[in-house]
Length: 368
Picture 1 (cartoon, rainbow, N blue to C red):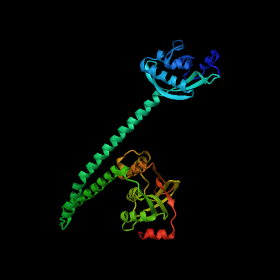
Picture 2 (tube, helix red, strand yellow):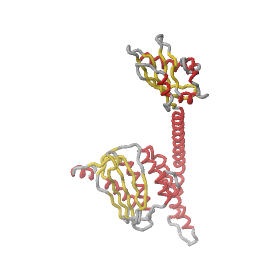
Picture 3 (cartoon, rainbow, N blue to C red):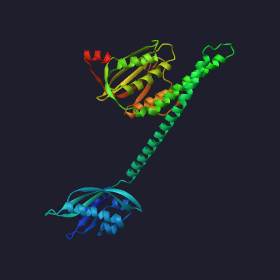
Picture 4 (cartoon, helix red, strand yellow):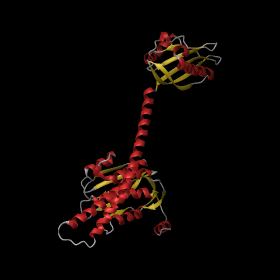
């Protein structure tokens, strides 16, 4: 195969990327024999200052020695090779990826190396900035979670004590109509609500640390246990699919408990209908649908679920749910049902639908 001639060198000037060629002499000396216009522009080095020089002569110090070593290796191996290198270009150190392709003579000896280069500086800077940002964000998140956990632990006992004192005061308290009983009841209510909030803070801080434990379980049985806690008197119309799932039952229980509790508390009516169903979103992921006929989700809650930003109106429960789902590569959203009362919450969750035999269903129902 022939080497680059003047016509070929002119063609290289039409290439919109840095291209150069190295001549390998019979004595093994390697010098530049082509340097296109794009290489001139990006490097800031004119063609006449390049041709006939080796990399050691072109670039000062270690930069030239490293580049020359790559040139010698490509000439010795006689095969295409790529490498990344730092070079002083246009008065600054740039990161460059270069590919060298050998040209062989009829005897199979390398007589020329054609090189193409890509400037990786900005890409590498962005990667480093992203890694730094992620590292700082993770460190900050861990610090915040640690702070929240410690604060919640410190507050839980005093608030439970406040609640206990209020209950004790209310026992056998004689109401004289002077408003003191109302104050005691208000104190008790504050203690209860504060204790719930503290528990939600702890759930929020731990949401991403829940260990996945996959098993087979029946969604209807899981929801029934949640309904029994949220609606012990059976006031509301709560239902769920009776199909079986293979997935993380504990994590799903946390998600459903918070979402169902939110639907009931924000229904805006004495009796609300809430239905839980699911479908296969992919071979390894399910899509759950929670539909209710209560008051439609207010804007802060919808904005929170869609954006993931913390809004106090949405409560720690929804924030914890989103964090738990996001930590498993899932998403969650909410929408008003067009032409109907109520809302629809939808979220994806790792798992798959499984089919149980009648014997397995009976054994699961009996706790076997």
